[in-house]
Length: 437
Image (cartoon, rainbow, N blue to C red; front, side, top):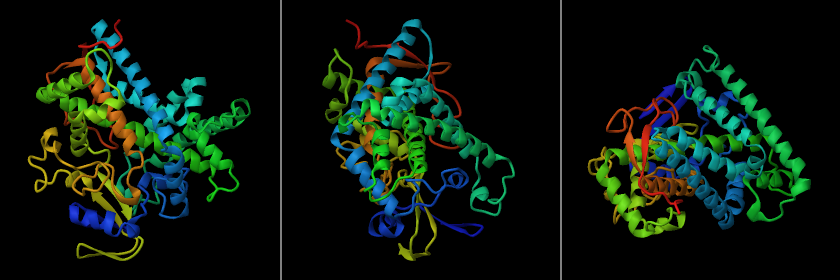
């Protein structure tokens, strides 16, 4: 399907064959992303990694990811942080259960994912000033709310030159507050380098690694401060919102499907036992937990569309795509294709049992994290948090929805993945306390 807004041309792809040609066969021709509208309006317009054109900067940052940020030692550090934050979440819910109080599970999940990702990113700073983490979370939430209100016509169409409703001004004011805060954090890191001098790569957080690269005069690409600031903005936007939303979707579906909840719990009990909390190292043996996560990401992908920009004239599935065309891969529809999935609207994790479908984008009917050069680099971290948190919530608690028997899986708001129309209010009922002596 082709769409035109002003001078901007769009193509929407909703079939696996065309998606495969774009994301694999002609991956290099579509290796750039076009800027989503709101980023054209903010102070880091030319500094994005996620939305960068395919070129030297993007290739350098991906290499940095693979060689510094996603090494075995860093992934183990991230896993340890995730397990610590899951323990805090379970203890908080145990206290709620003991008091007979309901919890806002949406808020609890957003808090745990934000704390986890913040500590991965700036763990050294978190221990010194946790209030800054709360301030960043507030700014990111407001930024997402503003960004979600832009209409395509305000971005690519005839209204793009005008700020008719003051959205651009409000977004910029919010981002300037973020800029001041993250600049102070960066200066504090640099000032404290003389005190701590963290030479062990295993102990470095993401800010340590990026500032080290920033100071490297021999680096292939010279990072700017704005690029570092925008990197963390994108990390918090993508990581916190989408991960918390995926876990909430999982709990809503599991609460509404007691038979699936029961099967998952029985598997956890048989593998983990009844004397400790589930760990990330248990996941390879928990096959049903894995397929529950796969089904959640099929029904409720982190983003319904993946964006690409054609770098040259191409022919895709018999159709001519001109250079400069903006392409939307409609993964929401791809993963609900009735020709590929039986009863695609239903939550049926068993459809993946004995199925080799993976999350890395090699099956073009299943693309929760994209595919090709621009596939999500943090997919393994998201799925790790998804497995561990869902597993712990099922292992430790029964769940009762406040003011109803079922969670409302239709009640989503506008905008990004975490923008639910209403909170998920539940009573956690303790079934297993892993900390009881």
